[in-house]
Image (tube, helix red, strand yellow):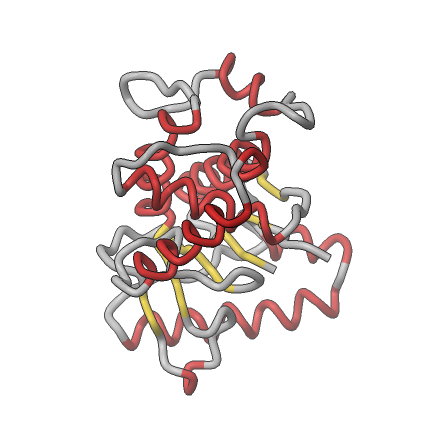
Length: 214
């Protein structure tokens, strides 16, 4: 088992999983109601409005997300960013404590999110949201902004050797390189999940669909 990320989830479920469609419609309704209660107006588009940029993404191991978060924290601290697969285990454990410390600040949309469920919505708000248990929102009530997650990914890109253009956009040639990563390359895990999250953010912002962790 691992983490899956989907944009345009209802559209996908309508074709493959009617029972899952009903479940996630209800989940999106709870999310919208909880967001409205804190002043955010957003609803998941209906399946009659399929996403222009399809981003139904394959799963990957949960530890890939931890690797990316570690790289982000080291980059934000101005420390050298090393590949998780090339880092001494003792050092990696020390770096994970830095992740915990930075997560406790409650400011990063990449860090303050459940590993296995929950949402990013295409609304630009400053800090991650922490909705109460009474809201019944997946991901322990933690909701991030697609726009803010994208901004954090853009800041991290140079530390992973990912080359964006002057506008902070991923050129087609660079996207092709990321799509063809091979096992054993430097930062392969970090680059892989960076690319998936980047694509998901762009798709979410283009069409108004949530990024769903499941």
